Image (cartoon, rainbow, N blue to C red):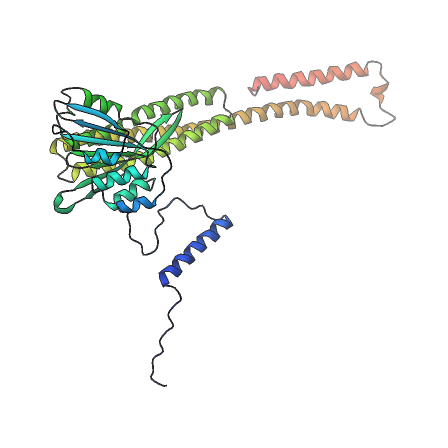
Length: 399
């Protein structure tokens, strides 16, 4: 009937599910065609809630490797180091020592999901922070999460810890949670860390670290991560000097590969240290209940170190770029020398080839061929011409 509105037929599936399915099929088709290399990105269902709740961690499979968990409690007059090898839930259920002013729990390896779930539940970690811990790599950053009535306020920090392992650069993600009197750290792998000097300072009675709060421990950890870039840059600086000597002594293709690899490693360091400088600046600038005034003062020193490292890094990158230019110039000069030698040799043999061609013609009347000394004289003339040309080239400075 006229005037009656037509009601559209409802789709068989919700529109969001249809778009989700189409997007996944399109991405699979593009990957099969080989036209696009997809980076590692966070895969979230369209319309899904961001973040990972602690109870959702049980749905994620572990990698089978048990995390190494260490707990350090300390105050001005006492310190206790212990490694958690038994049930973590039972350990967390126990009350910390009454004298403990700061507790630091470090986890080596994020593949042990049960460990992360226990700590996330105990310390009320934010779902977005849990997601960033598990989804790597993340850009170095700092986030503030306020709990209910500021009771579970946390500062979440992501940094990149770089080390030289077996002559190669290894960079891993480090996640730090700062509370009022607790610091949690999660390391990506089991390759060790650069925090042993911090542990030594905790063991030492009367150290400044023992006299301050948890935020000072956070500062010390970040400071150790930043300062460890100095020996790494020193390693690459020595490598640059060795490559510079090799470029002038014996330039070859292997040296060009080493220079390219060195430039790539310096670029990776740059990607780690630049956002780290911004991270430290945010911690120093923005006030928070978990960061003491004394810690904020010491963060200035970390910021200065980050700026110095960036300056050194940019200098080394310029040196590496200049070294590549020198290598190309050396190879070009070497090629020119080879071409010059071949050109001189060809120039010397041009008149000799002309004489040989003339007297090699198949004519019956060549008077010189009937002369008794024609063959020796031919060689004398050739040697005189070659010697004269070589002498002339030397006087001109061409050889």
